[in-house]
Each structure stands twice: as C-alpha cells, then as structure tokens.
Length: 469
Image (cartoon, rainbow, N blue to C red):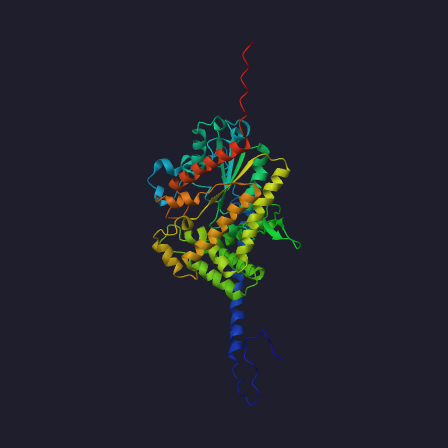
C-alpha cells in the first residue's frame, strides 16, 4: 500500500536491487508537501500577526476602511457636502492660468450656487430654478462662467420684473443617468416648490446610462409593457442598508485597495457587465469581448484624460454597435423617463415648469472640426464619424419630439453651438467650456422667459374710469 506522505524510497523488490525511482509527478507532489510543511510556521506567524493587528486597529478604530458607500434611493451619490461648503480649482489645462475662472465653490450640500441651501430653500430672492444633469452640469469652474451662471445673470438682467432676483442652483452629478437626476429632484427639491426644473440631457452618453445595470436605480421592462424602477445592483459601491462584519477588517480593505490600484476590480466589473449585456441583447461572448477590446482601443494617451473620447461619446456608440437592439431600447427608456416622471410629478401637485435642454457632445456640435486624435481613435475602431454623429442625432431628435408631445419646454442649443467657432468645449476632456456655457445659458434663459410668459400671461390692464358726467 502506498504511503502518500513518506519521502523514503520503497523497499527493494528482490536480491538487494533498489526500487525504480518514483515518477516525476510524484516527486513534485512530495516536494511541494515538504516545502509547505517547512513554510507552515512562517505562514502561521504571518496569519496570527495580521489577525492581531486587525483586531487592535478594529478595537481602537485606527485606519477605518473607507469603502464607497451608496445611497439607498439614488445609488452611487457623492454628497460632497461639508459645513459652510468648500472651494476647489479646475484641473483642465485650458484653465490652468485663468485664476478667476478656475476657482469654484460648492455649498454645504455640494451643489453649485452662490447661496447656502438654507437661503435657497427658505429665503429666496426671486424665482428659483433647479438644474439637473451629469458632469456637463457638475462643472468644476467658476459659477458665473457655467451655463447655470449665464442663465441666472441673463434672467436677472432681462428687465422683466418676473425674473428680478432669480436664483439658479446646479444639482449636477457626474456619471448620473436622467432617471437618477429626476429621482434627485423628487427626493430633495420638489418639496421646496421651485418654479422651474431644467434637465440638461447630455446626448453623448445619457442614453447609454439609461440601460446600464450597476450602482444606480435603473429601469426594468415589465412583461406587459412599460417599466419599473429597480434598486441599485451594488458593484463598485456597497449597500448602505447592510453592514457585514467583514467590512470592518483593515486587512481585507488593504486587499480591496490593491485591486483598485491595479485596476483588476474595474476590469472584473467590465467583464461581468459585458457578459450580462450579451445575454440581455442576444449576442455571444465573442461580441462581448470585442466590445471590451474596442473600449480599450478608444483610449489615447495624447489626451489629458486618456479615456475622454470613450467616456464622452464613444462608449455609448460602441455599445450600440456591438449590442444590436440596445440603441432603440435606450431611446424608448429616455422617452419613458421624460414622460412618466413629469406625469408623476404633476399628479403629486408639482406646479414647476419642466424644461429639457439637450447638451450635445463636441463631436455632434462640431462634426467637421479637425481632430487628429479623434481620427486616430476611430481608425482603430469599427466606427465611422458619420455613424457616431447619426446615432447621437437620432437621440437628439427623439428628445425634441418627446418634449413637444409631453409638455416639456425644449431648448435647442445645437444650431447655436454649431455656428460658434470659439472654444465651446475643452479639447482636453471634451466637457463644455465657458464659451459654450455662455451660449447654452443665454438660450435657456430666453426659452424659459418665453415659455413662462406664455403660461402666465400678464393680466389685462383695468379699463380707465369714464369721466364724470
């Protein structure tokens, strides 16, 4: 019978002849076991030390883990709020030497406004406008230079007494979907009774964001038609309603940070998401892998932010390209969000005027702008410039039609941005720049005043009294 854990040679078979040498696989197996036994004391010492350090840090609350905590309603939500608010500086190269414009302020809840939330909520100086949107609303440069600032200053200087003292609050949040933005309005601002809700719908990636299933509330199709809102599927953030014991471990947190630094956690998230998308839209794993590879190829080191083109429009275009059916589904969901959430707000007695202002990507606003980086990236992808523009244009026109049919006031900024040849977008990260913001904000103010006057006509002057007989 073979002794599985004996390193001595087998007994001689006969006449003193040595037994044949054991096979190489058996020698390797025995060598591994011997090394494991030799290393066991060291491994045990390391394990005991780690556990001891972990328990001490835990008991004394040293180095508390800082996992990304989600919001039970809004999903991933960086409140960024600190008492008194905070100041920051824009990091884009274009504003590096512009001391006035690169400084920005956020109030105590992390929103863009010149006033505190208490003043905005309880002591308004005039009509209040809440602007919701993604990173093209969450702009990290001086408020007066953003489209929120241009909207506010244009309203106040219009000479129309209805808008004297108007206040604008920018409630943008990077990477958010329009569904999250409307939920934020309902969750935080509807009870204030603001006069105008303005959604900046970024056409370069907001359609795609509506079909993503991750750390955000999202839509799920109902069997009989329509959609329900589902809770976040926690991936990069953790569920704030749970508090498992393992999350207090400092050792496990170090491992988590290591995965973050190497990018392994992000890669695993992408692989999982691409696989789920393949199942949802009926394509194979090969197409899923091709999408991930094209996403990798859409990065370029010549850009200040190497994933700028991917994040701003190409991820959306590539997803629609590789997963047939996702594009029309995204358009249906965009229409549903605009139609259903406005209807629900009005059913709850909301008297605000709802304004839809699409923000086109730089690639849609300036399709003929010479851009060697963009051309180089497209040369590596199964996409043409015309194809990308056509996808986004279709979405833009859907927003226009939906606004007309559902009662949103529509602000058409695309022709104005196309006509301007200035620095309307930052070349470094493709976000809208101060010159572009001025165009957008002024047009938004014009449409807001026009629509408000149509809905609230001034009372006819009282007839002059007849002269006494």
